[in-house]
Image (cartoon, rainbow, N blue to C red):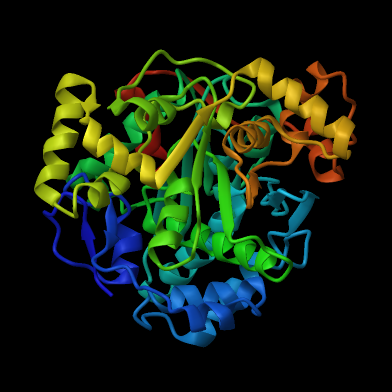
Length: 464
């Protein structure tokens, strides 16, 4: 297995070097040169595996044995040892057509833990093996930062700096990041939105001199390791449904902001998992819905919503999908991305749009609809949705068809977004781990959206 860039200007890499590169050195994103296709007989064997066993089997097709099996197994065991559910990502049946995949049983109560707990172990392993300091740099719309910090806090050989948009994440998300007082953690609260933070991060990774000098590593979903780790729970969830009386068609409804989580499903489908529909659920920052419905990919006006982790206008992982959509033609991808940079939009024709609509459905839920669904599912099923999960349910209700079941992702615990839950007149009991955050002091630097000043702080932190 070799890895290449979507823009075609990077020499083929192995697995470890691909993960360490993060953003490709030519500004593109790293992808497998070929996607392995899993046979139906192997899928049947995999359906009997535990989550951790399945993880090891899937990764074995991508890692080239660069990490010895016993080392890999130890990393996986450590990664999921502190999850609050033995299945890691359990599936809950809501009714005959709807299942919810609970992805919030990790230490920060969000789906990002599933990939980032492993990434923390991976970086720690590589740091020791290669005897090098790793400097992690990332931007977050809320959940990535907390999960990444939790994954590497206190680990030798690693420093992590996270940018988050000031006062545009939920209070619990903010506290999970900023109550950490480890010497290897820096939180920068930037006066702007997530796209502003992400742009600074991408520019620093694109500056190859800066990237090399400071040994930068990525934790955002621009890193293929994130994509691959998320692919595991598509297989796992599908197999849980398969073991019952499963109809012929299984759909996935996925709350999506940066396109990483839904692209993991696209990868699973290309690997041979017989997914029927991949449904992109967004909020009012609905660039992905507009693209799927109209063929125009154009960032719009930013809106703050009850689902802040999806308050994103520029979806980084869209480029990975574009690569496959354009027939794995790196020159065309580069031309499209240049057009996006220069003209602020990408537009495709009617025939191409049909092909996109063969791959995805998409629906953008507004704030009011999310609150209504939170109230409805609490009353009808005694199941409390967080607002991101509610977006996924809205998309499921819109696109559900006969002889179909849908697995909708619960991407966060509702306690992380109590501001929205309270507006529904619902009082929830906070888990003790979240409750205790409110009595802890915070450690963060609030900064203007000024790239030079932010980079100065970053350099000071990495060099001390």
